[in-house]
Amino acid sequence: QVQLQESGPGLVKPSETLSLTCTVSGGSISSYYWSWIRQPPGKGLEWIGYIYYSGSTNYNPSLKSRVTISVDTSKNQFSLKLSSVTAADTAVYYCARLDAGVVAATGGWYFDLWGRGTLVTVSS
Amino acid sequence: DIQMTQSPSSVSASVGDRVTITCRASQGISSWLAWYQQKPGKAPKLLIYAASSLQSGVPSRFSGSGSGTDFTLTISSLQPEDFATYYCQQANSFPQLTFGGGTKVEIK
Image (cartoon, rainbow over all chains, first blue to last red; front, side):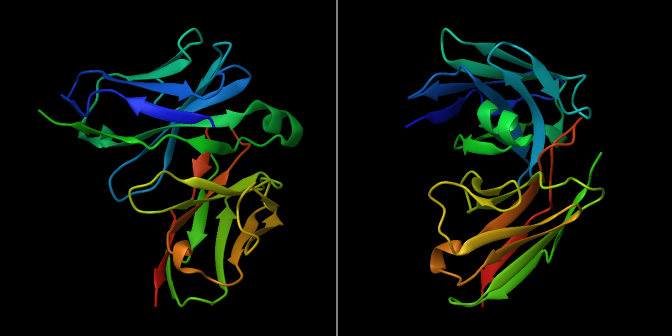
């Protein structure tokens, strides 16, 4: 079955750029939207943005100036870059899938598959 | 942006109890609402989409209802594996998709 796996540094210094990759295994990255969501320790969920396999993107306005999401279909991967990080960016970062078929049929954007998440700590 | 407010923030219940969680949107979102279950140290899991549609593989004791601004997740007979935190998510209104603050279902 399709699985998602996040990877990247667990510790990032303040003012630097957080970089994470999500690898999609067991299926194709095509025909889906792919998203990043984060959860600060002990807190709720925050949507960061999504990318379609074709490369179109949509970002949370509160993070838009610092976020870039990209896709590499040849590697079945998509990536997150978050610049100028502070301690407030410390969180578990999840990658997740949005089914384009469900979006087209229902108009709703639902995260039907998630990675296990990776904790990124911002500290000097 | 649409704000999602869940109540209660926590509930204590026993195995076999019926549990109801409420989610209210700051403006109408039709039926574009999802519910997720999250256990400690794990990723959220989609339970309900389109307000009342059960995701494949999810037990039928979970049900969702509502439209517009008021939504409900019901667990008809609480099982030991259902103790978790539950989140609602508005699923159509951009510029951002937003989640509720969560409801923790604890053992009584």
